[in-house]
Image (cartoon, rainbow, N blue to C red; front, side, top):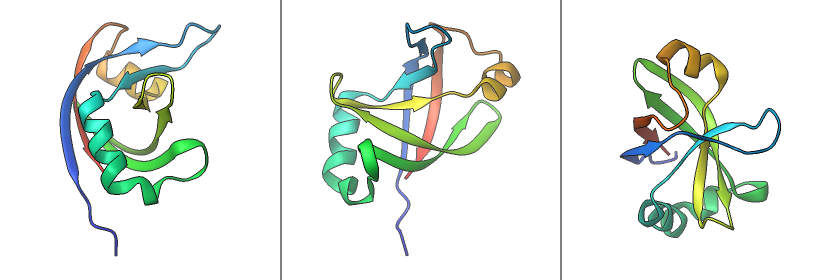
Length: 99
């Protein structure tokens, strides 16, 4: 059985600059370092790690991706959640993360 660890943080939502780029929040680097040191064995290909997320009134299952350039995990925010919660680029979003 996997132990669930909860993290809470606030981060600014940003959009990847490519045409039609995805929307993300980046985990704080100190938190990402801790997650990697404790849970790296849970990573799948390309640094993907399954997670459950709560933002606003929305909760869903997704995956984090480790970005070797930023040295942190990126959490994608799908359109359905952005629309429901009225999230926009540069909004500071409170996030609960369950790993």
